[in-house]
Image 1 (spheres, rainbow, N blue to C red):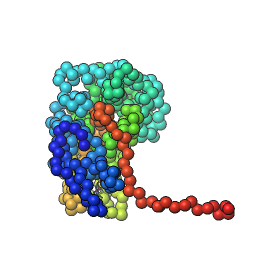
Image 2: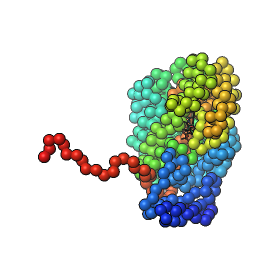
Image 3: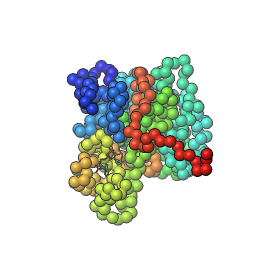
Image 4: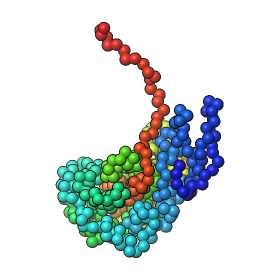
Amino acid sequence: MPSSAEEALGPANLTVGGETIELPVQQPTLGRKTIDVSSLGQHGLAVFDPGYADTAAYTSAITFVDGEAGRLYFRGYPVEQLATSHSFLEVAYLLIYGELPGAEAADNFVAKVRDPKLAIHVGIERMFDTFPQSMHPMAMMSIATEALTAYADEDAGLDARARVEQAGIRLLSSMPVFAGYAHAVLRGVAHGKSNRSLDYVEDFLQLCFSLPGSDHLPDNATARALNTLLILHADHELNCSTATLRMVASSGASFYAGVSAAINALWGPLHGGANQEVIRMLQEIKDSGKPLSAIIDKAKDKNDPFRLMGFGHRVYKTTDARARVIRQIALDLVEKLAPEDPLLEIAMKLEEVALADDYFISRRLYPNVDFYSGIIYRAIGFPDAMFTPLFVLGRSAGWVAHWLEMASGPGRIGRPTQFYNGSAERNVPARPGAS
Ligand code: ACO
């Protein structure tokens, strides 16, 4: 385990078959004491850790999740302090460069991200025109990001890190436009035009809600709420999609290929796709008229694959830091924009019933970031399929930071091992009739 801020502790002794192996132990700045097992292969040993729950595969200085306390830190700052005091692009700058920008640095960064030279290439615009209305916008986002490999022109004269930095700025510049175009495809109308003189979030909202058939343009309070949501989603250390991004980076593939893969990992219902599934679940509860106890029993039934969507987390063992902020935004925004929406009330009752149930208490399952975010997006007027692309908009900042961190240090290709439980060596049987 390299790097400076950790404290070396006495070694851990592992005794296997009479042999004792000394393994170095270090205390990171924040988090669990970590045993360096990277020498075990030399002793013919491996560790088994399904889901990598207890495996640190990288050192990182970007984000820390304190699952026991329900806290989330970006570069050491508690996320709830950043959530309402800064713009999303300022927080993206913090994640990428390590410090909050001063006024001049913030202006320069915004100018770079909003540079008209980074407008979406007409080839990618045409691609959106060919996407069928039935395509999920996460597929559109992933394809469009991958297509940047063909249309982006990062300066070949720059070193690898500076090229990724340029590509990262292009990504932040492109994502709201891709999401806005995807929204138009979903609605079955021609996409609008990005207006780069507008604020980042306001431009995205006008791109989505100035379309033919839209009946309102979200107000400033909605733009502020969305800005906060993007910040809350901006990074979350080594979750499934960021680990995917790092895995792709480790092979030397292109940045856009890595982000495209991360978008696909985020899409799954156990990860970022949960925000869409929560609304589907709440709607089903409403339509079925069944009591909440029936849905709770279904989630507890080990013979039923159904899980209470928006509940539980690999790291958080108390309420998700982000969920606390999001819950309050949901209460405020729904009351203002969609007071007649019955799903918020169902969600609050469901949360109350689950939090009082022994099954959820004993497993320390609490609402996560996705439990209330869909309700907010729905109140703003986004269709369900757009919820996970909104997650992508925020998370793109973290993906840039993680790729840059990898590009800045020595890396090793990601290649987990396995516990093989197939056949031992055996001979291929002779074909019947063969001599
Ligand atoms: N509903 C019912 N039971 C659950 C739930 C849930 N939402 N989440 C976990 N459990 C149960 C498991 O069945 C397991 O029970 P057991 O010990 O009796 O076998 C126990 O709690 C531990 O669960 P694991 O699956 O081991 O937890 P893991 O860390 O692997 O999974 C996950 C975390 C995927 C988030 C899980 O809690 C889940 O499926 N939640 C619902 C989907 C969701 O909301 N995902 C969004 C997460 S936030 C994000 O990615 C942005």
